[in-house]
Image 1 (tube, rainbow, N blue to C red):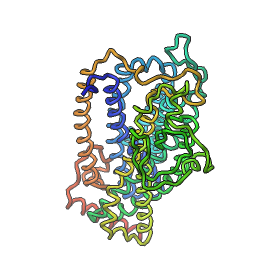
Image 2 (image 1 turned 90 degrees about the vertical axis):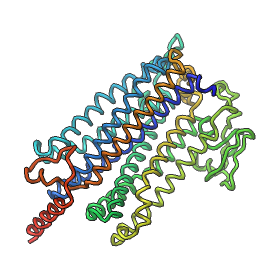
Image 3 (image 1 turned 60 degrees about the vertical axis):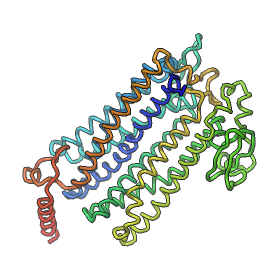
Image 4 (image 1 turned 30 degrees about the vertical axis):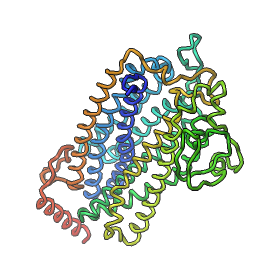
Length: 496
């Protein structure tokens, strides 16, 4: 139980918990941002109330997720000034600009136009309302860019030099720091991931309605839109995943070695799954493709890469201890990410076949249940991907990448403020867990309520001609049926 008195371990645990919880919500909100924009575009072009109701439905779910995402994100920024004060002093000159830009240029853009979506449907022009929907999505994507810029600089530093005192990284070139060797590949990879998350969330809601035989027209359309977005995003993901892996192999050799369980220098094989025996320093796997990882990294089957034992004997990576490195953890998280992508691809293939083939998915209960739980595949892929990225660069919080400025690196143990004690970290971690649990339950209840209500405008608001409010009471079943009947009659007259 010595780890309970280790402030470095506890500070890492606290930040890992808050970051992973926060990133449960961010992919959903950014991914649904695109779905909202697509549905609002459809409503703008068709002018039909059913399309406007569908847009309002997704706006409500997006807003509930966005609000909780903002609340959980603030916690991490405060921790930079408490448990990670020494780290903040080291990177402050670098991180000030992207974090300020994220708040001023991206967050304000997103939240301002989200206000238009919530309260402005009957107060602004239809075109401006449509533009607002797309600006909310672009704002959320832009927000992710600034955060990825900051995180990527920690992975592959650039545009900086070590101060004369050796205690701070000093910015020398903003663009070189912002667009360091891993920024664009990692950002494109993350954007594909969040779009996949939003698409599978959309498909899951559609499958749920199909299972309940409710809102069937909306469900089939949502399944089609979600599957198309998922197909495009998954195809792009293959490209961005390869690019990200190539950057890791070139810039972060110790992470690359841990991802493949390499202790000794070798031509890395390609494993589908396995287990790293850290005592014997071997990968236990039933089969492997010789040279497969080498081929994926650089297009050749016989390129040898340095293992952890060789890297630990170099001056640049001498701080790593192969015996203490989390090799199996990184190996498992990396291969879990790949496996989850495979499950998503298979699920998507089935959804495409049986959705566009006469809509037969509406009668396939087993496939509906697979799609209902499929967002979990995306969540596991995203979380395991981040675990690979963050645990893989240990023991550095600022990694000494191959092309990084000389001396610009920081060990994780040197970034933790010793002014924060172990008991204080345990108390705050416990309180965070309790508060976050309450917030998650509240979010789940609100979203479940919206899904139960469905894409239907309450009758009282229809009569008054008013916009559906964010916390509107669900319409009673009999009234909802009456409203649907009224809509059908109106559509029939228009058809005549």
